Structure formats: structure tokens, C-alpha cells
Length: 213
Ligand code: PRP
Ligand code: URA
Image (cartoon, protein in one colour):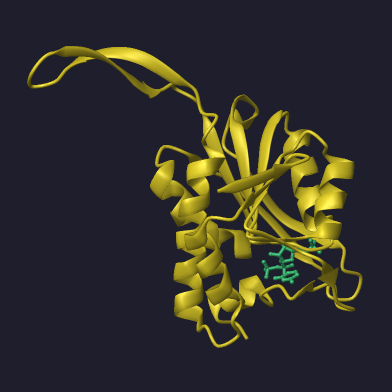
């Protein structure tokens, strides 16, 4: 239920595709939109964590001793890009409850379309952690590329990018600037409009999550 091509993983599971259609619908209200972003993020977390290592331990069931597998102690840090990425955190934490959460504040200047950084706080020793960057939208890829660079500048080597809708241009930009970073998304849309919004996309994710429009 996942297409993998050139380090891009596209979630074509029916439950995710159904929820993406609801997210795209302009008549979906802010409350439902927020809930859907959380649900889709939780479903995506299942696949994003599929390479997490396991360690064999011995336990006792009420019936017998047995060997069983648990997650190897591994540091994971979620880094939502403010604001819209915040909407993905709770869903991810439902599957990875021990993850730490850092934040990067970036907004895309409306005129230049270039990312402007206003905040960055990562956990101590983030460089020892796998970092999962969260942002529902990958449009020109400018914000994503800059965010990944900030994280790399702090010594992090193991980074995954998780978004809900990506554009072809955004995917190409991340591949060009950060070929080591796998992209997980639920859809790749073909176009950007004159305002660098994804077409058909779902509109302004931050505004729809927080009801600011
Ligand atoms: C949106 C989105 C990404 C960025 C994508 O954020 O959440 O961060 O734009 O565009 P890009 O790929 O062309 O850089 P926005 O700047 O609207 O801020 P917000 O999250 O505060 O709404
Ligand atoms: N940011 C959004 O929220 N949506 C887009 O389509 C592009 C950038």
C-alpha cells in the first residue's frame, strides 16, 4: 500500500486517500481539517517507523517464559515546522510516544516566496537522534530545504521528511539539495500556481488548521 520511487514514499492506502480527499475539499471545516491532519499523520507514522530496529528480550507470560521483540532504545525527535507542522505532532506521538519534539519557526514570505526563519529549538543531543521533520505542505521546497539545512547544521545525520501533499517541484528541490533525505507523503501534485500554492493541493494548511482565514 505504498509506492516507493527514488526515495519518495507515497501512501496510497485507501484510508489515507479517503482522508486526503476530505482534506482537499474546501467545505471541510477547521475542526474536521485538524482532526484529519492528526489521523493521517498517525497512519503515516506506521510506515515511517518501519525500519526502527528491534531487540530480542525474554519475558514471562502468565503461561510460560518466551523470547519476544521490543523496540531498541533509539532516540527519535519530531520537528514540526511552525505553524502548520504542529498539526501533525499529536498523530505521530500516538505511534512514537517517546519521541522528543523540537520546533523550527519558518514562514514563507508572501512576496518573495522565500523562507524566513524566526525560531529554532531542538532537544539537547539532537545529533544522536533520528529526526522526523513534519510539515503538511511541500510546495516550492524552499522552506523544507532550509529547515533540513538548519537541522543538518546542528549535526543531525539521520533525517526523514514527512508531509501530506508534495508538489513535483518540491520533491525535486529536496532531492537536489538533500539527496540523503527520504520523502514520505500522501500525494504528489503536478503544479504550483502563480502564488506558489500547490494545485489542486488543499489550500493554506496553516490557516485551515488554525482557522485563521
Ligand atoms: C507553508 C507550509 C510550508 C511552506 C511550504 O507554511 O506549511 O511550511 O508554506 O511552501 P514552500 O515549499 O514553497 O516553502 P507558511 O509559510 O504558509 O506558514 P504557516 O505554517 O505559518 O501557515
Ligand atoms: N503552503 C500551503 O499551506 N499550501 C500550499 O499550497 C503552499 C504552501
